[in-house]
Every structure is written in structure tokens, then in C-alpha cells.
Length: 330
Image (cartoon, rainbow, N blue to C red; front, side, top):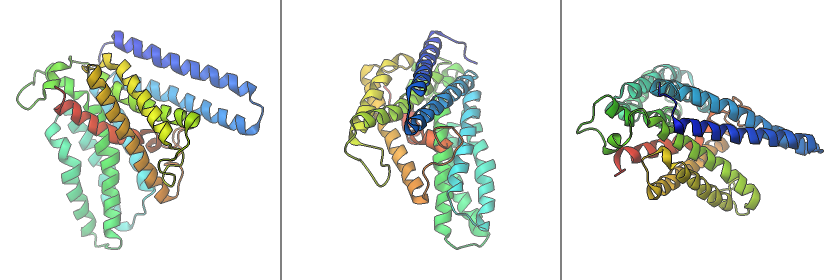
């Protein structure tokens, strides 16, 4: 378990202060709003803030246990997100064996491999071995009706919810190589640049920037939004909200660059990249919902919808950020 340090205390104080202010504002507005529509809006806002309190506490508690806590947390996140995506997917009896493997065997193997540091294996386990295995497993049961569609949906859900998401806790392993004395020819140069036990800061930086991008795109969209980006896919997303949110969240990333080995130039580039990938992840997940005819993936998190509604941006941002940090940081 990494010992609390100055950066951790600063982050805890900042997040706690921000949520405390949001809580106070929500309660004040609830007393002053007179219309039913206004009350519903404020109640939704207060539910979101309450959920953010819980999510922040759970996230903080998990990463305080280091790589193990992060793998357990994101393993559970993957399970609930996978359940929501599969719920939107029509399945048949011929899919049940494949679904058993997709839910109860493949995710634990993926996260155990992340935890023990088998990077060469976990990075290809789902996109190569599991893709082939699940296709063969479904085929052997002999149900060929809508076979390609059914198999592709299970494979795609596994890629998004398990493989992509598992890159988030894997950020902690970038510092563990040096800590374990394993720096060598197969280890990236950045692993040496990250002090032992500080990989959690990269994870926090990623999560904060991506989530702030979501929130700030919504805020800027409400304030200035006029032109829709993709009205049939995500009616609330506007070019003005997108530009304001991405630039504002990138500024947040630069402000939090003390958590990372990035200088200002690299922090700007990384911030823009993860915000753009987060936007793409969100709009792709929205397209899946529209195709299924639902507004939210679920109702697991009050005010936010389902687990997938909360991590949609992270699914695309995490693997790209991990690869950039591991392979391309000078």
C-alpha cells in the first residue's frame, strides 16, 4: 500500500473541497427553486454529486492498496459494464457457454495477468486468444442463426469492457518494474523515470482529466452550445461544448502535471489526446445505446445511469494513454 504523500493529501483536499462546494450549492438551490421542473433538475444534480462522493471514496480506497486494489476495483467495473452491454445484446442458447467464459473466466485471467506483470501476455490475451476461442466455442454448439452478429457483439463487449478498461490499472505497473528491480531490455524508458510506488498518480491523472472533460463539455454545452455534432447519436453534444470542455480539461491536466513526469508541452499533448479519445469513446457508446433504443446502459449509479455510462470515455482513453506513456514518452 503506497504511503500517503503530499500529492495524495493535495488531491484529497481538492476533490473533497470541490464536492463539498457542489453539495452546498445543490442544497441551497433546492431550497430556492419553486417549479417542479426546477426541482427535478436540482434533485438530479444532487443525486449526481452524492454518487460522486461514493465513487471518489471507493476509488481512493482502492488505489490506496496499490496495484491489487486497482485491479480488484477495475475488475468489478469490467464485470458490471460487461453485464450492461450484454443485456443490450440479443443472445441465444448457443451463446451461453461463450458468455460463461466471457463473464467468469476471461476477466479474472486478464486482471491477474495485469497484476503479476505479464504484459506481453495480457496485451494480446483478449484480442487474439479470446477472440479465436469464443468464436470456436460458439460454433461447436451448432447454432448458426445470426452467428456473425452474435459472436461479434460478445467479442466487442469483451474488448471494450475488459481489455480496454484493464489498461487503467496497468498504469501502476509502469512504476513497478523499477520497484521490483526488473528494468531491462524489455522495459520502457519511462518505467525508469517514474519513481517506485507512484504509478497510481498516472491513473489518477487519467481519470480526473477524462472525467473533467465529460463534465466540462456538458457545462460549456449548456452555456454556449448551439451546433450539434451528431444529433442522431448524442443530441446533447455540441461543437461549442466539445471545444470548451476539451480545452478546459486539458488545462486541468496541465495543472495536475506535478503528478506525472510530463513537462508542460507533453502534458498539453497528453491532455488533448485523452480528452479526444474520451469524446470518441463516449459517442461510440452512445451509438450502441441508440441502436438498442435505450437512454442509459442501466441504473446502477444514481443520477449517472449504468456503469458503462460512467466509464464510456475511459474505455477509449485508457489504452491509448497507457500505450503512449509506455512506448513514446522520451
